[in-house]
Length: 407
Ligand SMILES: [Zn+2]
Image: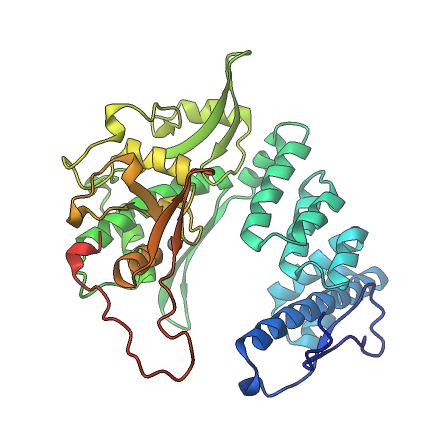
């Protein structure tokens, strides 16, 4: 911590017997702080939140030990006015954290966020993990990256190629439909194992893209409305069929020595047990991520504007997710790096995966796309700041709103 910044102190509050240097935010007038100070302040608040979570977990675990988890949940609801569901989850996590000293210490010291600690606690309950290795990763990885790290680690540490873990998740699948009395709205709520989920998500996202393409660009639905419409259409009008790009992309390495596929995974890196890969291979809707990038199919030139399923698969394999913000691949568009409107070809080398928001930034807000030849990765960059100093009266350039260019 930078002590020179007056917004923080390193004093531990009275009674806060928690390991590590605990930092507490001091109330200040946020309107008087610079961006840098606000940024620092958020960091301090985050660490303080971690520390409080650790204290809460210790308290709940002690109550559960003295009485029962149910009683601990009841007291938590009374004292913190949390919902029954939230209280139950907190008591459950607290019980798990009590058996994970390295995670509890790191949380108490404010070096890992509460969400990361919950992931470790959940994974430890699901099967064997190397706790200290995961705590180490949690200290510097953002939540999404850490969730992927954890998924890979669980698979590696499982001792059975992730088979039992996958089976347990399959067993936990559930769906319910009901009408919510307060709103009169029909609710559809479901949970699936990650592989089934990825397949459903792929089909749903393809329908969402189809609806987006059919929309009047001047009168777009919200993304939630579009997803709801896509779901309704898939269920109510199955005769319309699934759209292109609904195959679940499975990536695997080929072990030349043993002549078999190894390290099978979903495009986001979620590992797939070998037994599950065999089952998936019998499904016609699975697209093997084995292809030759040099084939004619990867370079369509000006013959066709939208990417083919094979091109999308190759793009997903290369880019993995939105090149701008990391949004999952099947929510992305195949963007023409040299715009189609400017003669750009539909060739793999001229395409990059971008989500709706990043696509919008590129076409309407002058973001640029660059390639790093060393990593073979594409990246987006914001335009130079039009207001380098505060108080200028310059107006920003008008956004590019021509709908033809939004592709
Ligand atoms: Zn994006």
